[in-house]
Amino acid sequence: SAVISQKPSRDICQRGTSLTIQCQVDSQVTMMFWYRQQPGQSLTLIATANQGSEATYESGFVIDKFPISRPNLTFSTLTVSNMSPEDSSIYLCSVPGTDATNEKLFFGSGTQLSVL
Amino acid sequence: RKEVEQDPGPFNVPEGATVAFNCTYSNSASQSFFWYRQDCRKEPKLLMSVYSSGNEDGRFTAQLNRASQYISLLIRDSKLSDSATYLCAVIPYTGGFKTIFGAGTRLFVKA
Image (cartoon, rainbow over all chains, first blue to last red; front, side, top):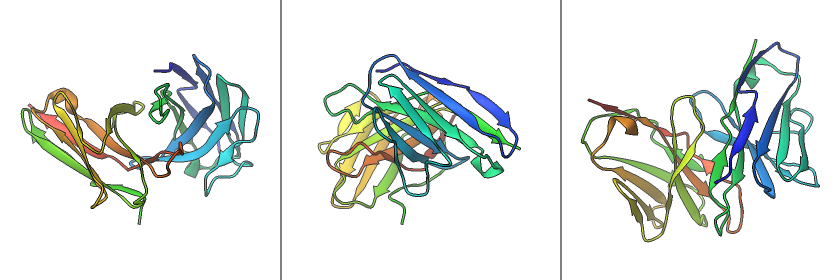
């Protein structure tokens, strides 16, 4: 299993500001995923971060609001831009495991974001 | 209809009880299925994969019913430490990597 370091673990931010979340993996991975988990709800995939190309966003999420960087195979950032209270959530990065199918996911410890 | 649906619970059971959760999925072409466990304020962690033939890991048994498009998780001899939220997860596309999660079922095991 991969070891994933995610930071910050939590933050309280003012509306209109931006927060960048970092995710560092101890091994090279082709894909990294960014999820959001709102209180009492399921994990929702925001985007897939691909090294060397633009991220692939899911329906309802756009690059201007959630820009993603993927400078190498072990690191990615997600920025939550122009925040509003509706962005208060837990944000999680995730990578596939190294089994044959690469289907099992391993998660960072999450970033709990509160927007005032 | 949500792609993956679970009974949110909560399930409140005494220690030693057997408890079962079901999860339904909408895409009949889905190929891969998993159960994850999420403790309070923690990240999800893979509990077990769900194979067509079913699989068992200690007190945990997972089964897949393709005809009815649901997967199940059975926990026998519940322990206090089993208290958590159990997330059903489905990869709906063959060869794809996008994982869809259910909202989770909360389990409380009481002494």
